[in-house]
Length: 161
Image 1 (tube, rainbow, N blue to C red):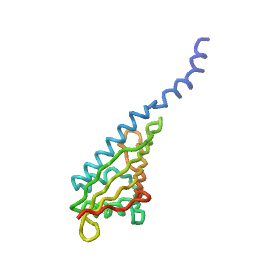
Image 2: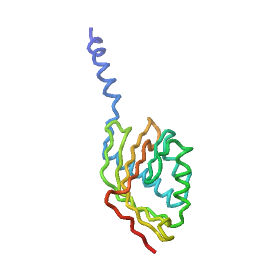
Image 3: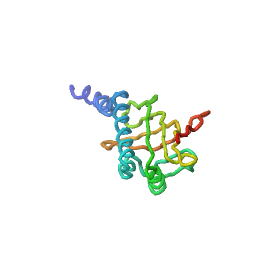
Image 4: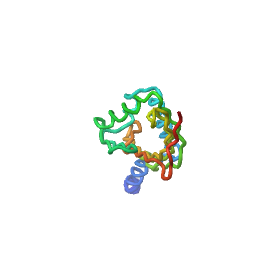
């Protein structure tokens, strides 16, 4: 009977169709573009644009602050950041990786925050190590699940008058 060999192959064919075969480099490039969109929202003082990149259970850690978890805690931190009229951010991408499944990625970067909140009313430039963990549900956009920022060790804050 000819049908039996085909039936025996059916599970193998179905399992092969389950894998996405996502190229990790292409995935990482897409995530980096999403990260840029969030930075563009910061530059535009668009709190909603910044917030749309966070999942509901995201944890945000900023230097000198307690961790903020979820939109109710993250939004005030973002709004305080955006309220600084002297804020600029320069991002230097670092290493990153993406899962071959196409649903998880990590980006690392160094961000140089220049803020108007320096001592004596001057601007302060603060280099920060940033790591974001990203997740994408099937058919959804990339969202941040963890956003950790740490002042680089041995760094002195540069003040500009």
